[in-house]
Image 1 (cartoon, rainbow, N blue to C red):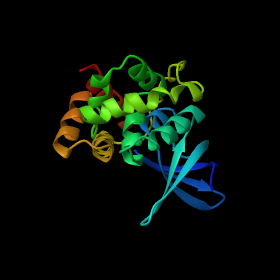
Image 2: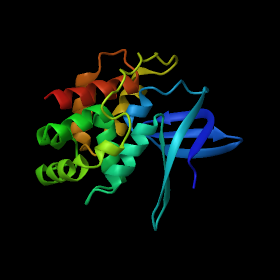
Image 3: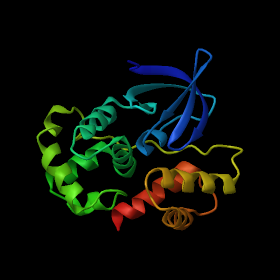
Image 4: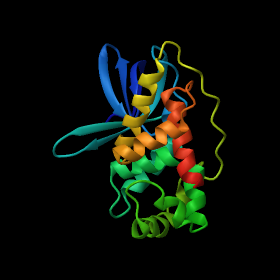
Length: 204
């Protein structure tokens, strides 16, 4: 089992990233809650990981914070929730906000996440209510630090990357394109466009 990786970031294409660990390139998927706080390409990072073994693939997921991995693993135990949906949840809201939705029985906020209907939202609230107490740090989350601009990235590529990331999170291509363009001001990085787009959905 791979529990942690320390290496140099070679590429970031949300929700995928490539990490060089001792000359071996590891492909990982990460929620946007992790992507927002990643250092720039070429920098070193330590990621806590979860390895999902399927019949057709082994997928490695990376997280900056233990509470995010703990929530990811807890979500996988909920009936009908797979890794893709768990990733979408952690990309649409942080762990503290998810805990708040569960505690306040706020199924409407959960149904704004792609792939989650009313029944799934209610199931998440019911099954996660008793599990949140055992997950440290879910009710007190520090605000994420400001994003640093990534030099050299062309704006068109940032917008395209943002659309691709939203599609990977479960949004239909036309919706992903509309959301990204509405969130773009012409000077944002892909992570900033995605953050703004997802916030607009959560506030709707």
